[in-house]
Length: 193
Image (cartoon, rainbow, N blue to C red; front, side, top):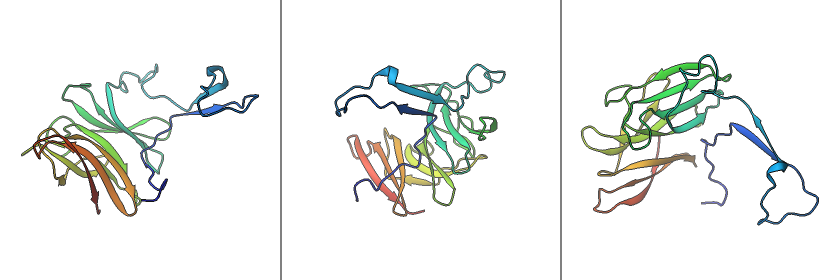
């Protein structure tokens, strides 16, 4: 792997930070002066507004700004350590709610701890997370504003979760943990889509 060649397509910058130049040369160990930083808030969803009740969040699993500018949010409304309900929210470029998909369950459009989103070069979205039926497995599948259907189970089982997704060199690279081989281990898989 070439150094610096891997980059995440899921990097989200909701606020931009600019540091002011100091009068002296700073070393890597210098801590920036908080008064020398400027933050510009682009927009907020769920803040105090007329529609804030409709856009309040409990536990955001992942965020992704798609190439078309829409913001995709995977949320677990049960919070950390709780099971659902889970949903996908899609917002337009101005922060307006476009679509809400999902509820707890194992059927079409239902989620069981979906926690990662990735966008493929052709604009398709994929989701990854734990699948419970018929057995617990790490699973991937297409994610649209209408539905999420896990279609590929990765070698996993037992306690398994927290996938990482990166598109690199024509493949979807997936990291996750699982305990199906007798002890909890970290796994890396390359998926051709």
